[in-house]
Image (cartoon, rainbow, N blue to C red; front, side):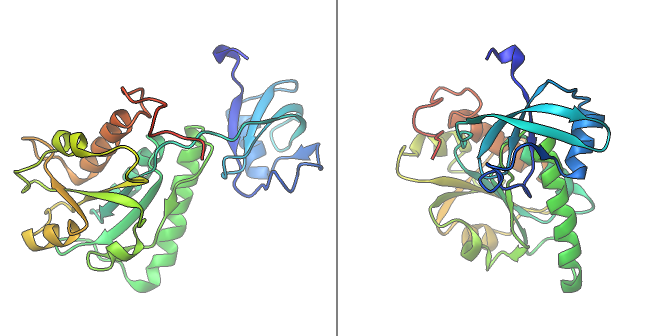
Length: 268
């Protein structure tokens, strides 16, 4: 199949493809039927790649398409979607709706998971009884962003932690890089040059709030990682994490960097 004829992809996390393997034809859930029929405007006879959020993929053909119901028949099982090298973002909670923007655009550039946390200088506060409501909204934003950019998976999203408890919830097999304007002895390029391929399984990027980290907090967060600067310019909190993650995506091969397909991107 040529790249120009590559079928559209729809991500349906509620659909277990393994469970439905013998149940074709299937009717897509209402929300996704509307997206395929009304937004994508796909017609009968067109091919549609269906993913379940766990990298499992089926190629299907649409046999019925209207605004409220899309019915697909099985064509073939596709190879599991390749998983990019895991890059996680630990983001100190910013003001207003900036975190929602970070979730949306971070999902689009391939961030594998988000770990919000409250640092010393965070202005925003979140009452315990509001956590579930916020999490529901954030999870919806991540799902919709994953669908929009045609990801085959959905990034993980953890409940907000604190600076002191953050280390306990971060992936233990990841190297940690804390981006801080006070770091003068090492920059991101220098840190990348020190990495040894095959010695780590993921990267966690840690970003502070609008007021930045205090020296004590930055050193605490970098106890199991590195403190790095991002150059002479001071980036906004909503910019720093995305810029760093995108730079790492390129350097580690997932944006067509020099190591593409070698050590950092796998199907495992």
